[in-house]
Image 1 (cartoon, rainbow, N blue to C red):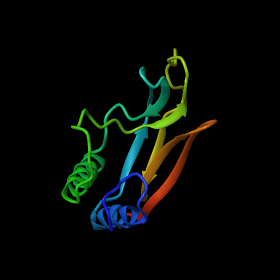
Image 2: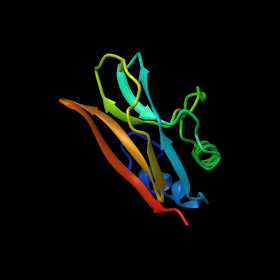
Image 3: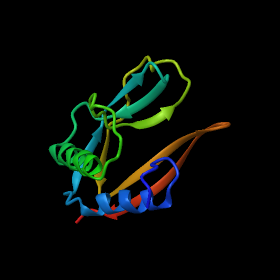
Image 4: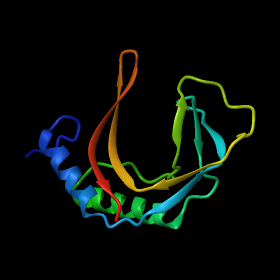
Length: 129
């Protein structure tokens, strides 16, 4: 397999191996506020504070990806979120309803810009024990 991370099927297999090597724990994710990424103009909803189990899983995934040579940019801060709108203006109000989400499955998802929007492809998915 080559390490052309943008197109190689073998790359997906390697990424899936990293994902399945994780040992995550179930956790609750409280979605309690809106946020905004200004450069891509994305409105999102997410937790005001990320659970320790999520942050540990993210650090383990980051390390595993670096170990197999995935060319990651230096970490600038992980912000767990759910994208609500693209090419949007910031949300000007508070969330009316807090969502407590029991996270029992995780997925490694590739996003690809395409004509008409972004397409998502699940590379690997696993149930959390």
